[in-house]
Length: 221
Image (cartoon, rainbow, N blue to C red; front, side, top):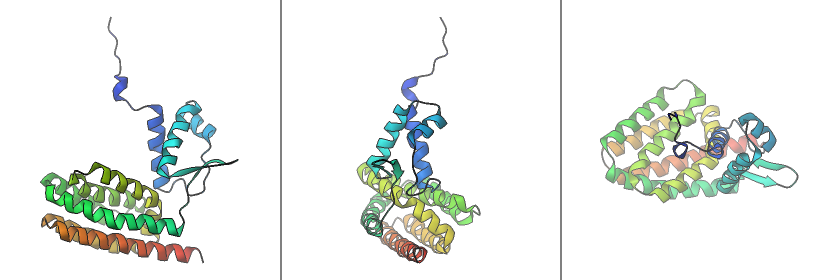
């Protein structure tokens, strides 16, 4: 008997697929803070029951990306200025450690890949792709740190602010500064100077935070 079967152990579950799609939509800003995540509608879009939708939303809730409200169901979690400050404080302290450890182990392949992402970020004319190139650049430089728990924390912290950061890049002059700072970070990595890469990464994160808060302050007036 011949059966052309798919190895289901190696395929993503419905819950995983829905989780990835919803997460990408939230961090890209396609689904905005405060917006309702109706389970029935999501289940209909993916042609599944509500069970995998509920599982995906529970995972997003554990990350802080959505929250369950009485009478409203799940909504995309907004961020207060205090929460934003705390997340950037975590990033400014953790990411320099990660990149310094990564530089010590960084392969030529990683450096080449990071350079490609840096160039793509600098030359991209489609503003909707700036956030993606920015994230890929940073994540690539952190990859060789051999600190999976650190990287998980960094990824979750970036998830919480990514949609705000993308908006800031598009609506302010943040791109010009980010291009220059990315190049400075990359140069430090190419020189295999972990301490300098850490210093420039911290300055980059704190500078981004100041610009973002200034932007949000103006928006609230």
